[in-house]
Length: 435
Image 1 (spheres, rainbow, N blue to C red):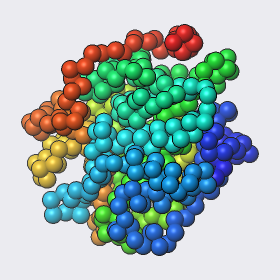
Image 2 (image 1 turned 180 degrees about the vertical axis):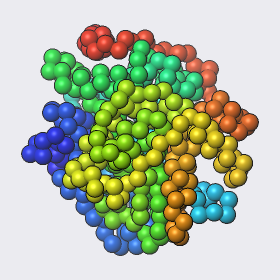
Image 3 (image 1 turned 90 degrees about the horizontal axis):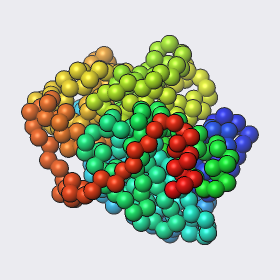
Image 4 (image 1 turned 90 degrees about the vertical axis):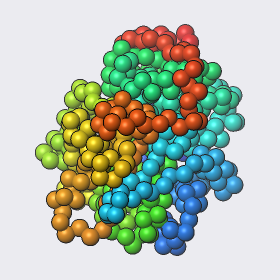
C-alpha cells in the first residue's frame, strides 16, 4: 500500500515511512492510495466474527503487504485484548457501543495500542530511538502512554492543556514516568497540537531527534478505529441492518474511520457528527465555510478542538465536495447544559450512565431520529470514555457516583511527575533538544 498527502496528491510514501513520520513533509495527512473493499464473504459473516478476527481482515487490506499474516495477527490480538460490547437502551431501537473497556478506559486504547505494536514492529530493525509526540485533549495521551510504556527504543512526550482535562485524566497522564514524559501546557489543546505540528516541520529539530506522532493525524492510529464499526454492525445483526451512527467528534478521526469503513463496504445508512459548542464541521456542513476558531472549554473536553486536523481527510474521502459529504453526514452541536440534561435523561429512562462525550453523541442520535419519524432501523451512538473519568459531572447530572474500575485505582497513589511548559514553540523545542 502507498500513502499520499492530503495536500499533495503526487506525494507518496510507503507504509513504514507513513507510520514513522506521522505527518507528510508538506504538513498534509497521509491517506491510502485506495480504500479497498472488504471481501463479500467477510461482510456477510460479520455476526460470526470476533473483534480480533474482523479487525485482522480489515487491517490486512491496508498493512497486509508489509507484514506477514502471523505478524499482523499478533499485532491485532495483542492490541485488542478487551471487549467492545453493544448495549441496548431499554426496549428501544437505541444502542451504544462501549469503547471504554481497555486499560485506560477510553476508545483511544484501540488505535494507540495498535499503533504502538505496529511502530514497534517497524522500529525493531532501526538503531535510532524515536520520539512519539502527542497532543491530547484528554484521553489520547494516556492511551498512547500505556501502549508505548517500556517499549524498547521509543520515548513518548505528551502535551496536555493545564487545567483543561478532568482530574481523572490528569492523573492518568501525569503519573506514568519511565519512557513517558507529560508536559502541562499553559494554553489550550490547539496550542498543544500547533506545537507538535511545528516540531514536525522543524528541519533543525528533525536532524537531532527522530519524531513521529500518535494523534489521529497518524494513519496507524486512525485506521484501527474502523475495526470497531465492523464489530458493532456484526453485533447489531449483520451488514443487512439499517443503522444510523452518531459519533462524538472533536478532531474527527473517529468519524473519518467510520467513513472509511463505509467505503470498504460496511452498510451504515448515515453518520451524525455530534459536537459540543466547538462546531466547526457542523457549521461547514450548514454553510459551506470551514472557519477554524479558538477552542472553547466544555464538559466534553476531549472534543474541545477549534481546528480539526482530520477535516482534510474528510474532504479527501468526498473528493472535496461538500454536497457529497452532506449525503452521508449530518452535523449537530450541543451546549454543556444540553449535555447535562441528556445525561440525566438517559439515566432516568434507561438506567445508564453516560460520560459527557457519550451524552453529546446520544443527544445527536435523539435529535436526528426525532426528526426522522419514518426511520425503522437501529440507532447507535459511541460511548467513548468510562463515566468514572468524569465522576463529578456524572454525579451532578444523575446524582450517582460512577465507580472506578479496579484495574486503574492504583494511579491515585502514584506521584505526579509532569513538567510545566509554556505555549511557545521555542520553549518546547528547547526542551526536546535538551531532554
